[in-house]
Image (cartoon, rainbow over all chains, first blue to last red; front, side, top):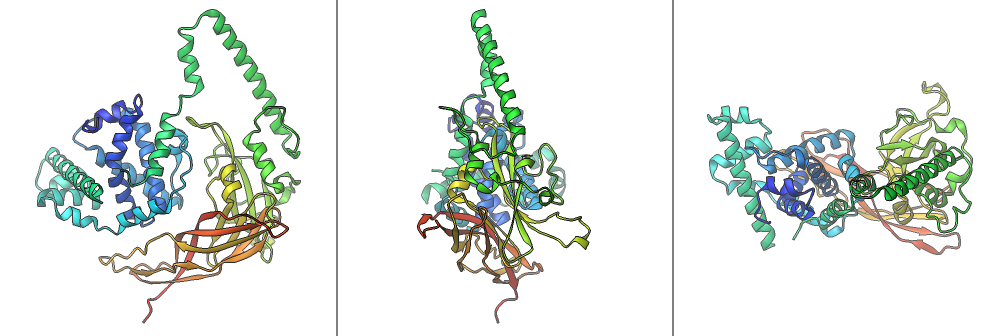
Length: 183
Length: 305
């Protein structure tokens, strides 16, 4: 199951919690790392990581496989929840409440691990990508361009831009997994 | 290995919890015989009658919930909350429950649940015009989680009458997330506001004095060379202690100073901290020593030369 495509895992997650566990482990580091680098608050990032995956679980039946990779879908959810939480000065929790997730009591070790992730320069990982993928991921994830703008800037079709971001994110995820495994 | 095992555990526990009984019943009725269906209908009527009795009991909520809840009956979270905080069992005085800007009457409210207005209590914080408002909130049932009573703590100012908000109302400064009764019993609830990190700590019955601190900031300095951020945060937070009155201790940790070089002109920075607390009983005995998470306010100044 660990090699199953994202769409299959999401489709199976409501009947098989293990499928969602695989999906969670696949993207936990990407989502938590993105959040903690954005907000610089490990406690908030941990809560929002839980909220992102709770929202993803609830929305899983509506996920349709397409050119948009599941990682970008999750980061889109994360971006919305982070903005809403910063506006309200409290972590969003509606998806966790709907799912009945208990309040998180984070250990010092986990918060320190997140802090390490925040301090770890994400750009180092980006630099390891081929130039075209690096620029595509940077434009999509950091500059938050939509695919039409990205395609126009890189003189590509929109489909090709999506493909490039997708490959870049997949390569980033592999590198993060490798780092996690060697730590 | 996961980065955040607590998050994974909490999510998977919720996901693996059984489906709500309602949907189980719906599925079961397709294959059960008429006799079982009749029995289930009788059970449903009994549950409905029980719910009506429970609801009628809610309207008599002004009375303290000291009484026994019946042999072998599990007390509701509302009863447990009342048994935990003596101040909720004291009479409510009408004028002091108006809290401006918070739509307490709405069905969902700003806290994800409906405020149980009959149980709202305010406690003056000694030595100030401020008060702590205790807002029990009824959280609706969610998947795998039954409805429960939780508590929101609001630290608020009492404005002078000529302020224009009407007499007796409170102006909220800061409020907590809803906290469950179990967490309240084990960790209390600490809410601090700027600029001097003053506020209130709510503790269960039996605690007469609270010491808050020392503590450490959990937030890494968000230094970003690309933006020119250079932030220095204090690592240690000095403790303070206060007497508890009506389950509330007025806390003032004092101003905490940090230094920052930044194009942004932030005056205060909200910093998550983990604080050691010590709870004392009337005879000086230590009741508990939980570590609590809170948000402190750091007054930012220019960098040291």
